[in-house]
Image (cartoon, rainbow, N blue to C red; front, top):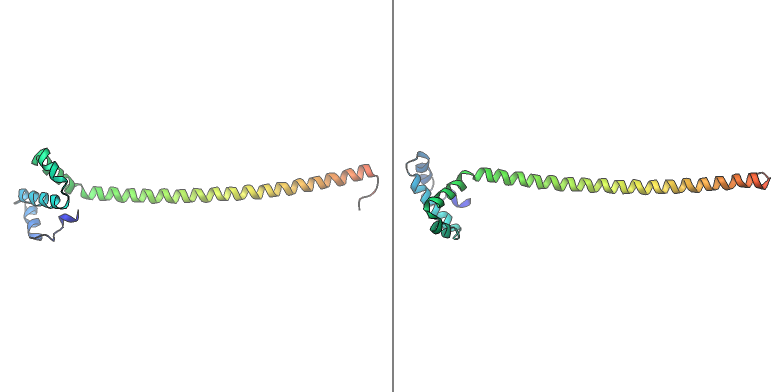
Length: 132
């Protein structure tokens, strides 16, 4: 929430007041005004839901900002891990395909060799002569 930075009109003074607990209501009002300025669609929520609901929403957004950021970072790591897993599975599949092709070539070679050996054996037994 870039709108809540300390670069406002009063700077760090308003956050110091809020930190001391002396002006929490004023701080909530400042945050609400900044939020409405940044996101005008929140004004409808303020007017329809009442100020208490809107204040609770703003306080929740401020309090859970770090947790949401951590959750988003975790989701980004999860997506990166899923992409890495998909690439690894793709590599495994391509290696399996290559092994299957090599195995097929080897089996075809062995089958041809077996046919030649059988052909020579038949010539030796039926031909009566010696093989060349």
